[in-house]
Image (cartoon, rainbow, N blue to C red):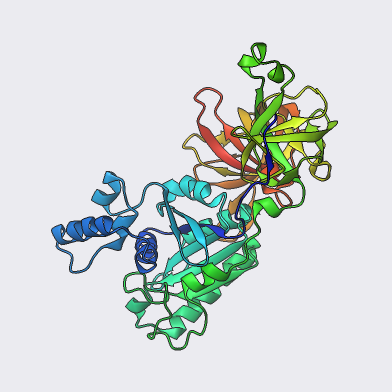
Length: 429
């Protein structure tokens, strides 16, 4: 392209994506507000506005939950009904935080907020312990294979900072997590209202020798998507400049634009185009008029290949080690997110990466019972159900097992009539 070659200047390994989850009134928004406030990530005018609203409501203390409950309906009802995203930073790390709602009918939002999370902070009221929604959110974290789960046993001040209560809730949580296959669970006694063990260790829990919530968040290991072996690049657009007729240098330009969802690509890398299986080599990486020598997830770039092969929107360019055999029969776990029920023989659209194909549900095999933590027979799925199904695709897709590749194994089930999302799916074979 005639421009200097540079290396993508990304700082990776310093960003942590976290999501909060839990039942209604467990204190999620207050915890997030406390975290923002105590880490000095609240602007003075924002804090002044929250203090004013708190006074108008007759509250004796500032309601930090208002820092995240931004929708008018949320402020009027005192609940969170949408995923509120916040960005903040400390000296050691940057964070993208998704504050998810607690009502059972908004479990779909929890799936959305947790789908890209490195860690889920699950709150439970120390007075109530493990509830059905606690089990459901743990199940979602397990299915989405979120690397880390932190359980904040909140409102510990309302049980007189009892070590016995914290110990019992922690044991109950770990028993449920083990049953669902969640391997690493960290439990912390917290009070979001008073700030105990949120940013600084609390003097009120001398029996707790672990880190505060922030200390744990700052030290958790994070597997950056750009450091994964190999790369995956769903093609969004084939770039053929319209000005090629006027600029001889662009006559032969053909690029494939999209976003790296995993790994790192370097000029010279061998690649495979899925689902065709055709091979080529990367000869250029373009970003905003510049040429890069490499790119990492989650950058959006344009790749140029050595060979003029047939690649279109919906195809995926991958490194040879990540290439998957295209299949038409798929076993999957669905988190059903719609009021409309799923039944066998239903016809839907499957959106995998940038590809969309027609599909039929050939069978509904089972549903997860949140009380027994076991699969039970089912003929369909309703709102917030989690179940196992088989799908038959109209066109082969190169899907991967979600257990080995989150980007390669994730898909959405879409209503072909309305275009609405019905379910989040994870390929199991």
